Length: 304
Image (cartoon, rainbow, N blue to C red; front, side, top):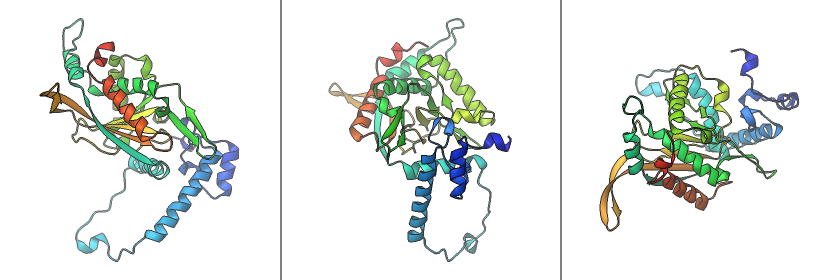
């Protein structure tokens, strides 16, 4: 890739402003579409760096020993994708006041429906990942709660951008590091189409053949540990989005329903949100809507 193509998008005026401050504009994460850097991003970058420097100076402790003083060690380069990801995660964590809402969705009927799907022509079982249903359910919830499908342009100016599109990011675990491509226009796609696209973008990420543009312009991100294990966690928001949904491993549990215990399949939900624009009550309502969407009737409404 040429240097020209790898540069972040920005106007000549903004580039000049960054140069005058002695900054490398390629280290600044843009808040506009496709990661375009504006003057306010440069100012926020300076504020964050100043705060971080002050914090480190106040809290740094002298390391009197090196790791090798205690035994054999090996020094390795951090993988390139992880170094790039670290920059974004640090920006998200230091910029966004995170809060995480934990809950569980009863997906017993959804799982029965998913496992009953068969090809119309061959009669063979269709392999549809639960993530395809979850992405569709999240999109339906975003329509009802538009503040989750927005980005804050500037707190100082009091501006936010409400997105009319529904592009859901998915966290893909690769040997190179974590990547978050987007499934575009989910509201216009059936579950079968989403399932096929999940396979395609995941494969492209693992082979490093995905376009850089596919990592930008998202509505909200879904990150799943279901294939690995675990239940609840605190996912970091994918800036400049304002929410991310973490999915744990499906588990069969005894749930008290209608005065008796029943074995139900439960899905752990971990919803992290930007507390500057979303409050706790709204987050709880979003999770309730999501649980309803993944519940008894939702799966049957969606054409495969």
